[in-house]
Image 1 (tube, rainbow, N blue to C red):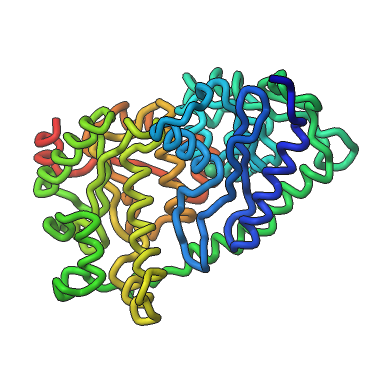
Image 2: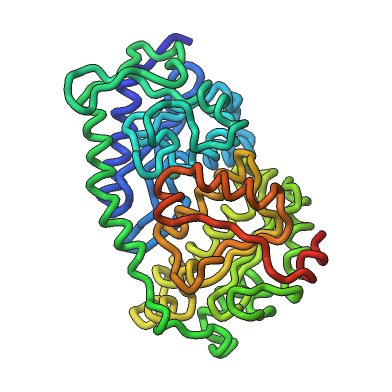
Length: 406
Ligand SMILES: [Zn+2]
């Protein structure tokens, strides 16, 4: 088959998706997936916010396109191998999407820069934000095409060369400006919206609700052992071990390496404990599943059939933003692409600084790497993660819990 598309045309399609995302009240970002001839496989917009509610903090265009690809393949559709697929995105991938692209093995063409959260935030295409072992892979697969012109949006090409199927290999200045303005016009508004959760003083303990309450019924239909464990706030202990061990076993059965992620609320209640689905998709890690399931639980309770203003208020108070609780990973992050994606997805879940009384929101039981190495990885991340959210995973304090999983 012949060459079928210009870089400019593909970026314009991604920009169209970004416009749709903005109209929906979400981050103004979009993307396109192309096969090895430049044919469009799929286009998608950012879906973090939908219908005036947080739908899914991981629903960035790139992440959704990658999961779409693996879901289609799982259904039996013939699609090119990942290294023959090119993702075109209106904005430099964040840490989550950058890790996901590397884990999946796709090529990527990038329009606008993102100095806060972009994997190429310093615009050097050296990828110092990534763990050392991933930088070469990024340099070989992340393409920043030249933008011709004389305004601030003009640039030289950098990173990987555009694939040979592209006829024109540059981006027009006004299209690049549009991609850039769409994220600038939406970031503050969406972030403010993401921080409109209930204050700590308003939060209430879901364990005090009647077992027949719709909120608890929905929570337990998602995770039957919800509220079956309760520890001291922000201090998980050995009582959590059976739930983690069961999910770790399930993770292995579903193609993972025995990881899982639990979410405890600010009262110490176990809400979810989730394995990954790596056999389904290279990027369905336990944490990605966990944060998504919790966000969608809240979304469905508020937006679902029969929900009213009373339910909205109940969800706000009894199922707080995860930043008030504790994520417990069975296995801590390492230096691989999937771990980097998880760190990024954690950042996208928090979106802003942690509450002052909860600096250890992110805990793990078994380390993959030394804590000092993990902290060095976090320190190298783009400014949003390093300076604003200050991601700082720590090992759980209870030795008995560590021994139970070791
Ligand atoms: Zn992203």
